[in-house]
Amino acid sequence: MKPVLDQVNGILLGKDEAVRLALSCLMAGGHLLIEDIPGVGKTTLAQALARALGLSYSRIQFTSDLLPADVIGISVYRREQGDFEFHPGPVFSQLVLADEINRATPRAQSALLEVMEEHQVTVDGVSHPLPEPFFVIATQNPTEQVGTYPLPESQLDRFLMRISLGYPAPSAERSVLRGRDRRELLREMHSAIEPAELAGVLAKVPNQHASDALLDYLQALVRATRDPARFRHGLSTRASLALLRAAQAWSLLAGRSGVLPEDLQAVFVAVAGHRLLPADHADRRSGAQLAAAVLDSVAIP
Image 1 (cartoon, rainbow, N blue to C red):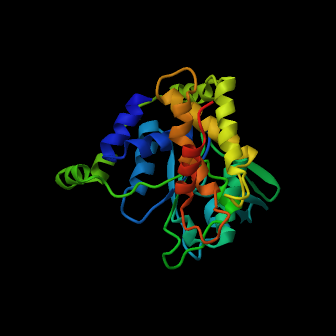
Image 2: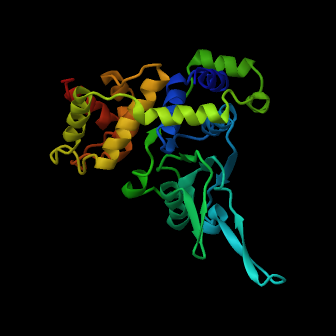
Image 3: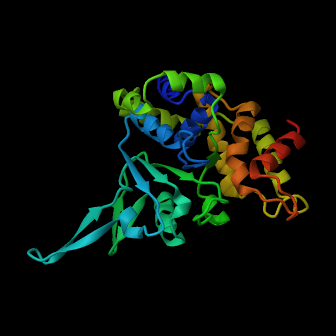
């Protein structure tokens, strides 16, 4: 997967860790939520990943008047044939960018989140499978911005990871300023991996060896989040499995055959941060800060 990383990092400068996390999320079979201000490269990351991986791509702009049918598609009555014909919506792509997901109403949000879980669309009793692999990158504006509908905790849990890109380093920003337009570079990108090779890589992820000692460490991290004196809710079993899959994907990207504690540490904040809330309502720490505190408090067995 190194050619994929190299291509994407050549477009999104100075964001190596975010790119690696995004690719790990895809390889782990999950979906990614990027929360950040406009203009820092969220859409560019999604487009670059789609082109480098050779995936079909579609973008859905979430707005307050978006309807579920605008996401999943609609059945249209054909008078001549006397039946209905399903017209697939933009969700029928391998990589779907749900742009500004928290601008849409909860009803439209739910339509996408159900598809993320089921990997199929059911309309009028007929199921339509989505292409594989199926990967959603949703972007979200900071919740303090006007006109947003924050995702509830149950829906946030559908995303394997949440990351932020942040501002680029001065040297990376200077390269962007002096370089070519990112849109031109995106148009010139070609797939860095064949579909069969990508399928083979995805199949390897669950087979990455995780020792009993590694699982002891994972469970110790999860138990630390289940302390009611520190957190309102701990990580669920689904989150535990997501953490393992993400660490397996990270270790595979690093060229290892087994998962090490540093692989768990590398993905823990991205996997756990959006699932944690402080028990004390006066505690203003972010989920990422809470997850980092858990990492600091749990020793490697």
